[in-house]
Length: 286
Image 1 (cartoon, one colour):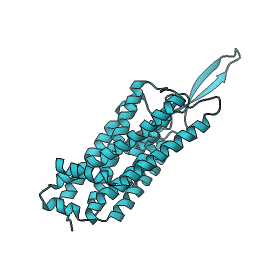
Image 2 (image 1 turned 180 degrees about the vertical axis):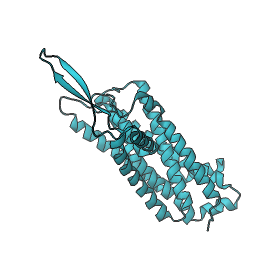
Image 3 (image 1 turned 135 degrees about the vertical axis):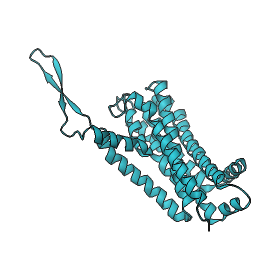
Image 4 (image 1 turned 45 degrees about the horizontal axis):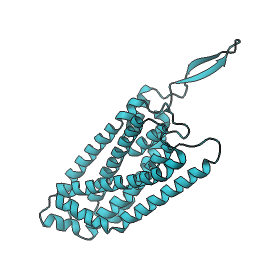
């Protein structure tokens, strides 16, 4: 498999899609930095926290494009068939492509964060969240990238047509975003609403009232589980943890959930990779 990885990395150096995505990433970082600087002209300043992880919204699209086109060309150019002919196992081919996709995703994310950190920290200051919390956010991002890579690698290697695989990956990202938006409203609905009443003495009393829109514990837990299994769902939940000014925790995700949400990514990655490798071994490569 080392030879396959070396071959992929050699192709990567000369791959126009890879370098094009890096250029686009630099452009996105520049636009977000500039926009935040403009918005910080008022009295309240936005911290660097949210800006550092905002590329999570774009990483899925970037990886869908790269993985489907980079691996898809192996079908159209006959490279995939030649790898098998010279003795490489399908298992090693699958894992090599998966690892390549993961490394590219991590590389793109790192480039974005470095640009934002180098330019943004002198302007916006250091992190508002604790280092421990930031590390858990980074761990979650890493596993979100791994999940994206497993999904797109599976689709691309099981689909011989590069156009179909590319379109399928892009549509899937869109579907996951829409599903996450639909599920989040159910998963994040609070069971009780707090009302504040001022007494005659001027004191404020807090009363909890059952939320009439609460979907029920079972429906909420099912929605939250599905939401956490989607990389886009994890993205929306984690981003809700990083408010603009100042850093604060919402009720969408507890500290324990933030520390363990990556386990959903691990489970999804294992299942998709297992199914993908099983089907790829039995696929008729024409």
